[in-house]
Image 1 (tube, rainbow over the protein chains, first blue to last red):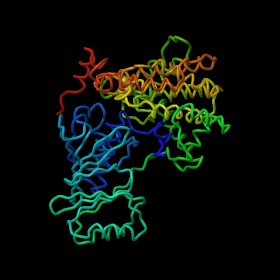
Image 2 (tube, protein in one colour; image 1 turned 180 degrees about the vertical axis):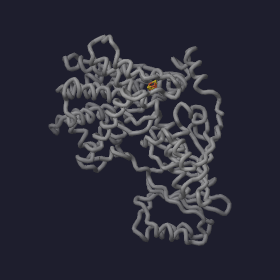
Image 3 (tube, each protein chain N blue to C red; image 1 turned 135 degrees about the horizontal axis):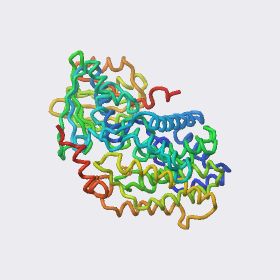
Amino acid sequence: MSEQPSIFDILGPIMIGPSSSHTAGASRIGYVARQLLQDEPKKAIITLYNSFAKTHKGHGTDKAIIGGILGFGPDDEQIRDSHEIARKQGLEWEFKFRGDTARFHSNAARVKLVGKNGGTVEVVGASLGGGRITIQEIEGFSVDFHAQAHTLVIIANDVPGSIQHISGAIAEKGVNIASMFVSRNESLANMVIELDQSVEEATLKKISSFSWVKFVRLVEPMIQYSSRYEK
Amino acid sequence: MEFNLLSNIVEFCNTEKKNMAQAMLEYEMRNKHLSKEQVLDGLKRVLLVMEDSVEQGLTQIVMSPSGMLNNWAKTVYNAKTDTLGPALKKATARAIAVGEVNACMGKIAAAPTAGSAGIMPAVLVTMMEEHNIPREKILDGLLVSSAIGLIFAKNSSFAGSEAGCMGETGSAAAMGAAAIVYLLGGNNDQILEAVGFALKASMGLVCDPVGGLVEEPCTTRNAVGVANAFVSAQMALAGIKSLIPADEVIFATKEVGDLMSPRLKESAQGGLANTKTGREIQKRVFKPAS
Ligand code: SF4
């Protein structure tokens, strides 16, 4: 039996309107970018593609993405005022628009973030409808994950045995790997590892301590339902 | 636990001696490994968001960024003339309220989609007010409506881009009709009749949002969807039958959706979106990306 839909796929999601793809999904792309930066962002350069570029105003896509970058969930009413909040928090941002590019999904966005401590990250995500997203590119690597599981993103020199070392560090703490996706470009390898549980700080430290590892980030699944609806 | 047809759910109810709300509660608990309390808490959350969105649209200033919607819910709620008594007027206003809140970046519960999010809240709030139905029972109404949505999603589609607006406001009206019949003591057969009536009335409804925004005609279509739900439930509760069984009606919506031109399915290229005025509004709202 395949996975059956939940009644909360039908009665939900609870979200900030108006559009599950152009608003809720957009905010999640921003939120994933923030997690990949692992720092308080001070600058954001966002490129909206195709339908996102054309209809962002009416759908609040621009506010939703900034809201996500600030760490707001898709059901957080602060999304509506995200631009003012960002200004107060000292986040600078810039939007660019590319109307018709077949290279990207019809609802896609590129988010480039600079952190307060100087780190940067560049992510491309697409919104699939119903608030679901897929991350398609990280730091120039093609990837494909939905940010619905605990996901480790690693970029490392492509040395022999690297995958064993990393999976060893994860398994050591009893965490199961649900799936692993590896892509390579010249001398670097990118790994996207979906996990059944989250990993401890110690595991992340251990992986980053390998001399050939350049970038380790943990993307946690979005926690639905903020605020008083929790009660 | 798997249901693929409405008739599967009814059979399950008959063998297990359960009502439709209990069947859906069990479905969710078993498939998602949740306790009864967890499912009910989730439903309470959905109901709270629904009630809040109605309340906001009726009390706050809601003008959409595009300017297409402008505090219509309040206008309807306070109208001097009632076509059929205050209940219908208020139900109409509630559906519009949620549409306006959605367009203004407020918080809503998609049911089943954001575009059709006004129908279930308007139905449920109206049922509470007009029939004094307690909140716990309203949660059962939500469970019954989820049964209809589940089978509709499996055998047709909620996506305006696939099934047109019958997939959105049509399915929401059917979900609402089912909840009304259940809450007024109707049996499973009557619930299914109401679903049949509501979907037949929405058969072939195109998705043609002006400028691609979920505002015009979506908001007023939600209001009419509420009337559809109440009228369909009325017929079913009286005991008349939808000659075509609800499951077959759902398959028909799929066929009709497939036959519909892509121009009439959310692409904002046909129907109202393609009228002279629709195009003008689109130009005004979407000045070229700067
Ligand atoms: S017209 Fe289209 S966008 Fe509007 S409610 Fe209907 S299906 Fe949704």
